[in-house]
Image 1: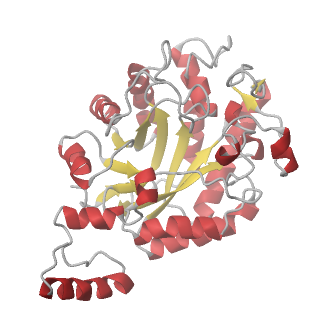
Image 2: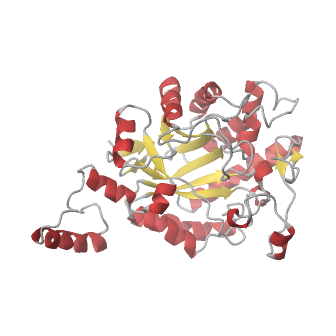
Image 3: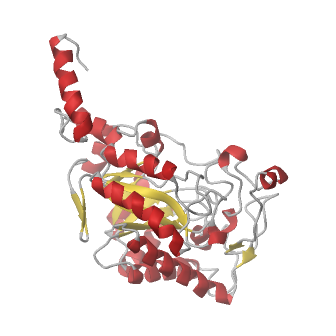
Length: 379
């Protein structure tokens, strides 16, 4: 099943392997660079069905760091289009994740501390900026305090998402994902741990879901009807008293009515940096988030994407065969092995003759294989 084609609305992927959005913190004023082209292009060459551009900020103040990619200006379109065109040329479906960091905006790049910006960051040219969030509470002690969303902010951000959708379409992307996980803006509206509002956007589950659902509705209406829409959620907060899997099922049911096609099932991140090693209730073992994608899939009827320590082809195949997900996302495993899909196809017996490899590689590898066989070497 891992190498079955999958059709989502009018878009068809050559297999069910997705390369997750992975921030590179290497953009220049939101602009992608050659690093991004090569970084993403090798995953398409490596056989993935769908390749995602990293979390891309819909407005400048919504960046996590100064190095985040952006889509808040028409000037960002041409660089992104160069990437989407190359991904298509290599047979992959180009995808992009729309994001707003909320109270996790204005951070240092991970290799410079993975926390609040410091004077040392400012000396490098990375100065702090004002941020907004669901409520006024910062991520933690020492972090920059956000301004809570006021009445006019909601429509401003909805319009930012609409414009980002227009730009994503102009840039040639065929799949769009809304980032509503890992303690970023939309997740902080959902979680009772971060949303302490007492208006129609806070309190009850219905109220806490209100703004993320408004964003999903605005994006779906602006995105072409033939193109699929994903949403990444933290299936659980993984903290006592936080967002639960039952909440995610309720959220998913509402998303389905709006026209979201796939829920990307991650978890955690409500406290501290999304990439920091924080204490969790859920053990990080291979496939630890599969129960969430399975439950949301079965109880909402939505397609789901599984992510999180999916390391081997047999593990991915078993998850699909068991109905635990419809798509398999790999992230850091793709960094470790950009050709993971091609190696998986050989391991599962789908492509013993290198036919799925780029012609420029496969031609040489078949001849090497023949030489190895003659020498009595098995690989």
